[in-house]
Image (cartoon, rainbow, N blue to C red):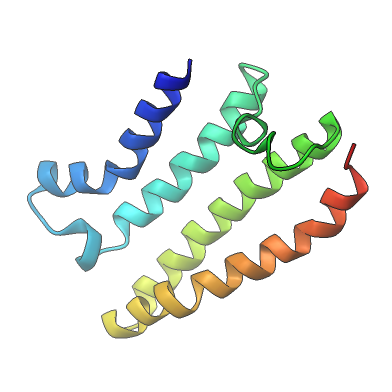
Length: 131
């Protein structure tokens, strides 16, 4: 079971490089396609694994980090899925409407603080559902 997760994580991390190879263009730096697809795929994995397989992907990886009741894990799972969808759309909007230098700066100095703020906003819910 552990090897399956390592393999699937490896595949997800290298997805944009495969798109670059297949399409023949530099997807990772010239367009937002690789980042958009990666965010959407991760959100789909979180949602599909819970709905169809009744497996909580976040619980599988973070169960040793902190203990939550089942409702807490479900809320955290869906919140992160929706957050990744939000990141995909905001990234696409910035990429389509701004120059490449602004988009790159947003990827470095915009997405990271947004992610930290989102994570900090999850702490009250995590504390509420701790076992």
